[in-house]
Length: 318
Image (cartoon, rainbow, N blue to C red; front, side):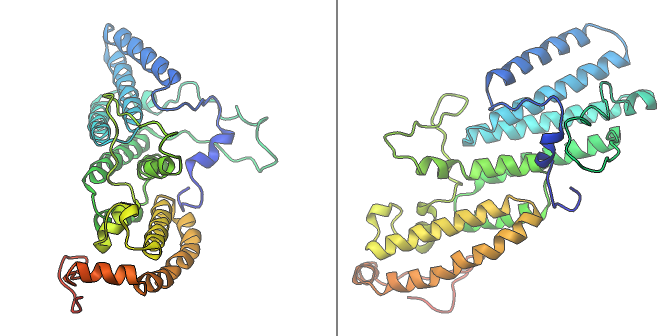
């Protein structure tokens, strides 16, 4: 995992006791109720140990609320997720500040190293070592800080250059899977809805009951806006232009998916994505040669001026 050849989710088959559930499902609600009961009980007790238990339970509740709020990925829900991550980091600081005996901090109650020996396949046995208290604090602080930052820049992205620059910087950070999974789900949320006919797809609702708007998701409208073309595919000047926009959107969505993977999988996927991007030249040539697009250029007064990533005009203008 340190070399990002595999992720934590690859180890779930050998993990004991996990039950996966959708965000906001009944299992998540039951867990939150149990955490509330545990927090109330721990806060009624005296002593540093009781305070430490209450602090850990509050941290678990904050993390659970953050992940539950992240879906559906609306602007308000992602902002709320970022605030919950900040609150969870504050609980981590309180945990670290508590003075407890070193053996109590490093102990892992309920951890049985050999619990999965019978469930595992024919693989060489590896020693299972509990994560230290300091390492666990650093891991969760890094994960929650990265998740809060990702939720904030997702909400701010409205154009493809903004999304591309943030994603490339995000991919270079080597984030843990829980962060990349939330970002991937937020970016691909509209893709799954677009593959279903409008009459069959129900609108996604944010936690406040309103329709979730994901303007940061890569789409044909985002690609068309980058080229200065009409945002609606039905208004595209000609069938070839519409096909060009569709293929560009597919290539962009493939790149977005790849940048949310770990670095090992990125290297394998990027080689295949080069073929998709190479075809864009042919589609662009076919679209530009049509009379519909030429007429649309003329109707716009040939005033479109291309700019670079910094917004500066290029040497050639049309």
